[in-house]
Length: 266
Image 1 (cartoon, helix red, strand yellow):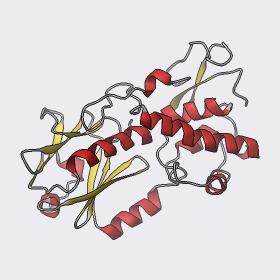
Image 2 (tube, one colour; image 1 turned 30 degrees about the horizontal axis):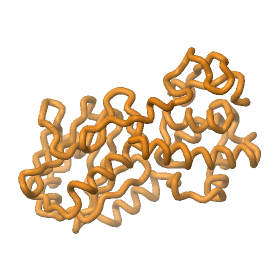
Image 3 (cartoon, rainbow, N blue to C red; image 1 turned 30 degrees about the vertical axis):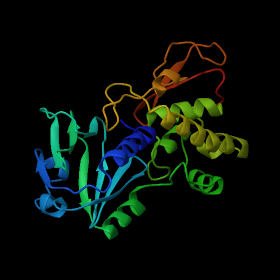
């Protein structure tokens, strides 16, 4: 599933290619992608793309009237001038024979048209702190209201937005904490380490183009490179880069979780 670094790279690519362009036509090939909104085409066609933003794992395409809120979920791709095939579910036609294609092998992604007030309400009720903008105080107050494994709470999009399985494992390894470490037992030094590693690892991953584990590509079809720098994610049974122990795995919040049993405390 694309996480914050991957979605940020999609947004950056779209900004270079579709900003200020007019939407001349919309072709909906799979109704479920737009939640069956019968008026979707009428709402979107003829509008100008004023801005493109990211909020957590969401892409927000701001139109001159209203917004497109896009969640790629597991296998969604938003491609500029991408090929049209059996996995293409939505096509937005732009100026000068260009287009924006939405592809999704598993059809889990969603594209919603929301007014400004609807968008504001949706984000306020469903999306937590923005990790690259939150203060240490905001982070500490929000996370310490939670109990249970720290990884479970890092994955909670209502607490912090944008962190998924890949980056939760990497952040906790860098912080020296086992993913199952109880959140309520975190001390100030633990909190500071997690906070700083959230920001540093996400920033490095963004600059590396994100992680391509299976089929993630940005809006131009380019794969990411950060998977080559993973310390624990996807490395079960391999040697820990820090202490040479064999990496272990467990399941937390239904997600396969890799960690070092020796140099991560808990």
